[in-house]
Each structure stands twice: as structure tokens, then as C-alpha cells.
Image 1 (cartoon, rainbow, N blue to C red):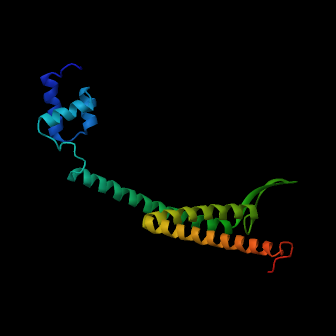
Image 2 (cartoon, helix red, strand yellow; image 1 turned 30 degrees about the horizontal axis):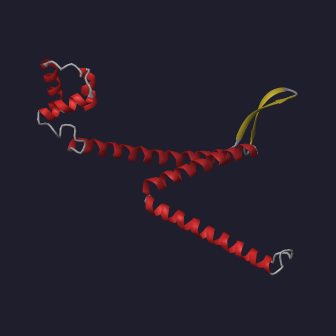
Image 3 (tube, rainbow, N blue to C red; image 1 turned 90 degrees about the vertical axis):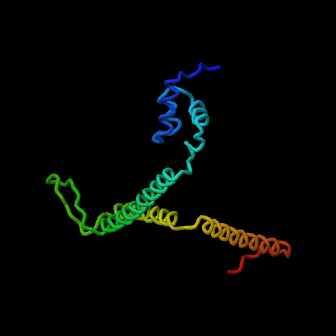
Length: 183
């Protein structure tokens, strides 16, 4: 059995519990006691709801964090679409590069970037748009509805596959397995 906590430490723990500024774990760390000891001191003092996470202050903090996360996602969405626009412009802007020639190095500007650079810009653009669209769907989409749509799509694909297999088996059963398929 652990040693009994002295009355002075018990009073300090109780004071922190009543102040309501520290979480149970923080109080335990501060006073070098177990979390269970902090809980037992609160219960003994009749403070059964001292660490209830459904209290108004905790709910407000949770709502504030949710709001901050939504705001951050909204800003990221704006930034991703802006990135996509920048990649698109870059793919069609004049392109300056250093070229080595017989007279040495010189800057050469072409009307458009080389095709490989345009392709890289459009790949980056596609990634930015794809991620933005996924983020937008996560922000506005109903998870149940998205799941329902995905299952419906899967069901339709499985139905098409089943029909194709049935048609092939029927064709093979009639001895038409070697005949070329009709368009």
C-alpha cells in the first residue's frame, strides 16, 4: 500500500481541483501522485463532476477547436486552388533557360516552356485540384451519402462483371467459344 499523502499535499491538490484550471493528469504530475489519487481526493470532497468532460467550458473549447480546424481547411482549400492556377499559368508563360553554345552560355527565352515542363506543371496542377476536391468533399460531404454512392457504384460494376461472365459462359456452352466476338 502506498504511503498516505500528507494533509498539506492533499489540501494543495484539493485547491487545484476546485480552481478547475488544470486537468486531472496535470494535477497528478504537479503533486507527484497518481491520477487515481487525484480522483479519490475529488470524490472524498464531494466533487464528483470536477473532471466531467461534458462541462460547458470543455464543450466551448471543443467547439472552438472544431471551428479553427474548419477555418484551416477552408484556407487550405483556397490555397490549393490558387496553387493550381499558378501551375496552369506557369505552363503557358514564356520560359527562360541557360543554354551553352559555341560562344559560351547565354539566356534564351522561348514562347512556351519545354513540353516536359508543361507536363510537370499540369501534373502538379492535377494533384492540387484533386486534393482540393477531396478536401472540399470532406468539408461538405455527408459520410453516409458518400458511402452509399460508393457501394452503389461497386454494385453496378459487379453487376456488369456478372453479366459479362454469364454471356461468356453461355457463348462457350453453345460452342461459340472460338468465334470472334461481335462489336
